[in-house]
Length: 159
Length: 159
Image 1 (tube, each protein chain N blue to C red):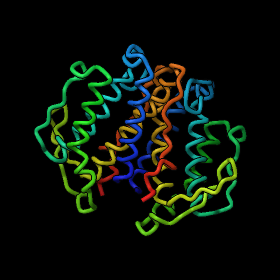
Image 2: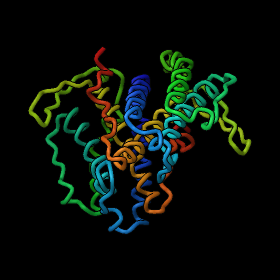
Image 3: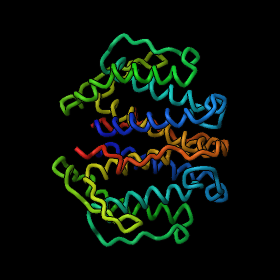
């Protein structure tokens, strides 16, 4: 479980670095599909990971700013760092005994939906990889090479 | 581990169903980024999963047809079914004792690269999710709703 989170965090950092090489106009330009733009996509993966792990599973009272409050690369990197600091200990402490514990999600329609912790954690993993795949298309549209998505060979399993 | 493979297999089936609603011309049209087209992307995720698990980890003598030999939706679905039948037992039998076993990959440059089985399995998982994210963008370009990428709520954890 941890390795896939570490993969996502590495790839996210690489995309933040990639963003440094692109104009803010391109980062905010409306595009087809997904969240419709690059910075809102990175904001979205940060917010969703934080929301599920700290707000959902850990039941903390969390405050996620709206996108318009953090609509710059630096502010989203800062948000990502703050959220990471708060949620990473839970991911590092993950163990199989947590798999079947239940959290209750309140849907937008006010329904109570139970989810196993293990399901939520894998949802968060797949969610980020999916959206990063979308960024890779938009990167080519801009004429830039995307960040590599390869998990293999990036040193995650060297220890 | 298994749940994320099952997620990928469900989503892949959903994309095959989605493909039934789209003309072959759209499925083969050249697009920007990724593998450059929809059917070649689905072929690629099938071939990569099969190559790593059956050819790489299990060291079977495998034969993966070239894309041009299976360049239709039905043939790629058949290929996916055949590969799945052969590789699924290994995924269902996966256990933690396999994590650190080593396979040797021969790179395109002829170099021998060792990889832990656990790294290969997670690479295969992330690889498919990434490419499926790309399909979701192309789907919107065609004007069609993409297959849902949500892992949560699809019943994978009901048992």
